[in-house]
Image (tube, rainbow, N blue to C red):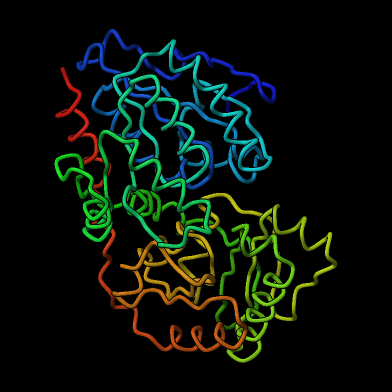
Length: 386
């Protein structure tokens, strides 16, 4: 993907991906999709498929917020997506550094493309930067996965999602709860549509391939749990990280579960720096590709996570989930019994894990039925179509 060096904008050769805009039935229309992280790639994939299938012009810009093969490029390959047309090479850094690099690199690209609308997704620095550049260029901003709120302004993601929503021309809320959040903030109801979440589309489209994957982890008999950690409020604090890992170790010991931990590069660095070791019963593995991770999730007895996307995948796959935070912007998953917010205290993590392990997996999925991308594209055509 991309093919450009860090901090260099590169245009890939579009013809090999069959993007002959002149032959498109929606002649002259073009949307720019801006992404930069693994979850954005996964959630945008169903939308890209629908755009291609319906002959609607689009370009994909990758900001380079995630830049390692394991955390990014492999997902384009596995999801059979064309490489992005542009790679901005933003890389890592503080929030200000990363966001400013994206802002500076993205502006000339959007000026040259002059799209009908810019589509951003979720709550990353990529999301906010894409929205800011577009709205200042008077290009309509479309926010997919709009209206999520944790009501915790300490989370950088909460700031990103609130600012992006208020810069957007059109908002696609995954649920009625997220729609209500937007209306409560004074946003015009005519600009908000409930579509479901495209992560459900992605899971449904790929679950068959994931089932056929040979498991990456050879575990002894008995069930296992999955642990993921990446949020800065958890992994950048050695004390909080130790507390969460202790809780995971207690779950492994008391519930006779091996806890498989695909360790995020950010977390690995902190653990090495602080001399933090994993407790007995918690098995670390390298990051997994999309299909391998989906396979790991679907066969698990329990998922422990601080990831919003993993909460959604667990709910969709009917695997009990324990959220390792004090808040969640996915309260619908808690309301239906698919998820519980545990915080970071070891005893509370164990208690919540026990509750979820005993819970029946019969909840309805509040995130949609797998047709979110179709609904989104239909609304795009109604609003911006010629």
